Image (cartoon, rainbow, N blue to C red; front, side, top):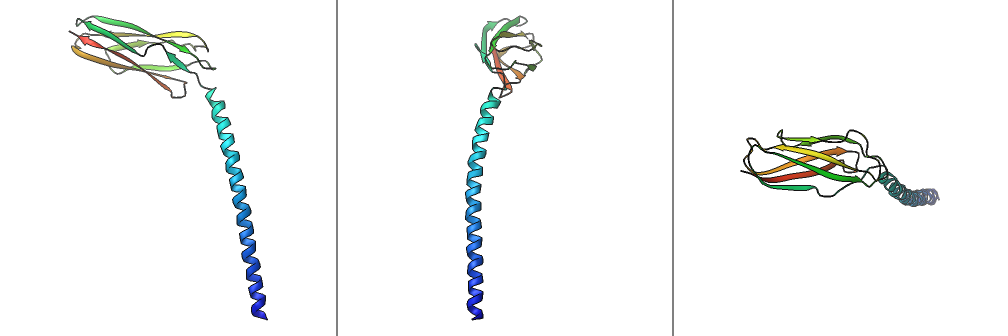
Length: 151
């Protein structure tokens, strides 16, 4: 008789554990689905928190120039996002290239430029300079290229 009593208690315990674990699993699935929905909504909301840079042409080929010349070019871009574009810095891959960029925020829908001056002195041969703009865009970096040949 005692043996049947222990079996009954053990069976009740096993059934209780299974019931709780099944219920817990259902809650976890519901919580996961809820979290995924919240993350999707959060991603959509955060996408509007970034400025968006649309560049007309990110590469400028200056062709062939004589050594000692200064090559100037303006890269034109538009902020197509819903937030003002704030440029924190613009750097060139070489000290021979000097960028000049707007320090004031660029409002949504506004167009602006980054002016780059490349001093070809002591820079003979094929050239490829990379200009990196850091800003409040989703990817944070926008890359521009300046290339050509110095004779």
